[in-house]
Length: 281
Image (cartoon, rainbow, N blue to C red; front, side):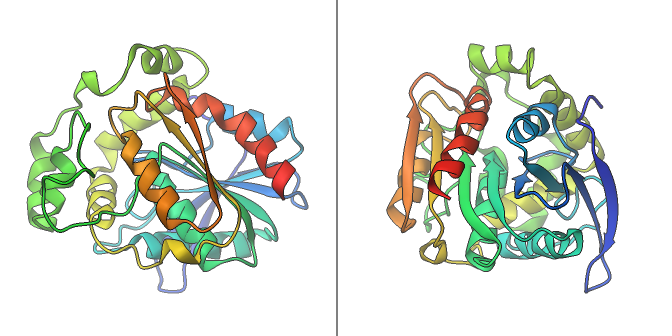
């Protein structure tokens, strides 16, 4: 799969489901907890592992329910998925971490920070989705999304979102030229993993979209740690206004706007985001 090195764990959750998790690095080190996008398998990606290793950090990732071998949980909320990750962190002995979420992983990173302030001393979202303000379908939350069909179908409930998944195809204009260059370079493993995950675990993405347009189960006002919102100004998947919505709701957030970055190319900011955490933590 071209993913990073590390150990794979199959963990038993309190309700009997299975959670697949990965980790790499010194067990006693502070951890970068990577919350993957939609769709992804949860396996470690080389640029994430490399950025953590260069700073002496451990990296932990988990496949959200419905992805990568983790038992599906229809109807899960963002908070439910974050609670699964918190269980994994406890089992793996993580005592201090930075919660990082890319795209669809952004909400889950923020939820972990809200649920476990004893573990999370900072949070970073990279092109992260903001809470859906609802009601209505013509508000600014959707503005600028090249392909919003899955999220709009999710507003009509699980059956509608499942039907959409049967015929949905990726709109290649969602990515910029810089996005494609990034996928051809250091983040190539992400593209390969996303393609495979979308085919093998479509239910994970269905459940993600449903969770994004429902109440998350946590309030952004409860995210106490310092938070960095990294946003690409040219993002056609999760546009700029999502960063603005996050900034309005998070009590200790700052924005790093990269005006020319798209949805994938913004991920190249990860190493600097890790350095930001070291400076504020």
